[in-house]
Amino acid sequence: MSLAAESFKDSSLPMRSRMSSYITSLQDQIVQSLESLDPDKPFLRDSWIRPEGGSGTSCVLAGGKVLEKAGVNISIVHGTLPPAAVKQMRANHQEIPETSLESGKGLPFFAAGISLVIHPRNPMAPTVHANYRYFEISKEKTEESNKADEPGEIVAWWFGGGSDLTPSYLFEEDAIHFHATLKAACNKFTTDKGVDEAHGLYDPFKKWCDEYFVITHRKECRGIGGIFFDDLAVLPHPRLSAEANAVKPSTQEEIFSFIRHCGDAFVPSYLPILEKRVDSPFNEEHRRWQLLRRGRYVEFNLVYDRGTKFGLHTPGARIESILMSLPETARWEYMSDMGVEGSQEGDLMAVLRVPREWV
Image (cartoon, rainbow, N blue to C red; front, side, top):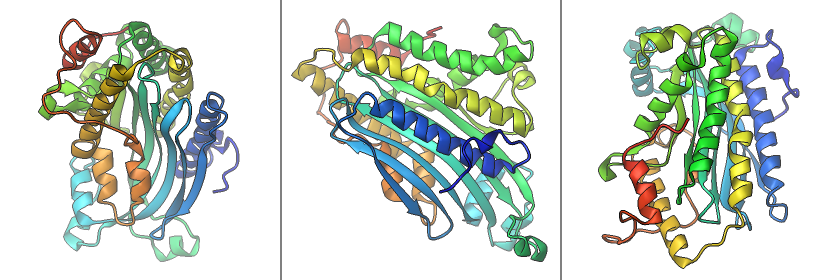
């Protein structure tokens, strides 16, 4: 995958090229930062080609001293969306032509994204997840665009993403640091536009995160949240209030800038926490609880996560990369006695059942 370094800053390039360049650069930055903490266990870099169109690089690590399992993946793919997927996406993007559904042919798509999950070995160090993505749908190529090797006319595009923290043991200073760093990244866009901090984008995206990462059958959240958003484009978002829509980025350039603010915040939001916790003492009961919480992580990802389900149903999907998010080890117990009120484990359960405001 050869993309000019930092060509994402060149506004004359099409967004698909700029997003591809940015996630490639961000992947390198994140992997190098993590390898600095676990130098004896470098990431395996696995570049792959998708037969249906596109490519990617999966950077994975297993069995490290600090990181039990970690993956930092990028994919830059294109192809044809089946009519059922087009119909589903049209619910949030009315600009997608209805004629595509009538023809039964589907529509060309392009998607570029970075997705990462880090599962540390020490139970006191939290798992973290982040994902930033760009999606576009175009019309069928014309004879002219075929000759020029260009995509057809773009009829819809949007960005999505977020980052969230999943500790097994709650350290309030870690939660505050993680959320404060994301808040600064989110609100930098709006403060640059003269909007005060109280009316920035962190609050609605933090609320969206709390409501998305819910394990409904357990009546608890997967973790202590962060930020989450999807389908950000020019038009007001039906999920956001009138106040939030008034300050959200609304041009492609603005939203891409916002995505970069959030993506660039990953390392400073998480690495200081990981560095602080990797050598914390722990015992077998701490490990047991960590594995139980990982079981809950698996439940959410396989039952509810839209990205996982979309990936598994996409023709030509690379299953190993999609399931990279799952921990190497997890545990389920029948009616476990752990997590009772008044215990360290119970302190975590309290905030998983009723999400808190951290900053």
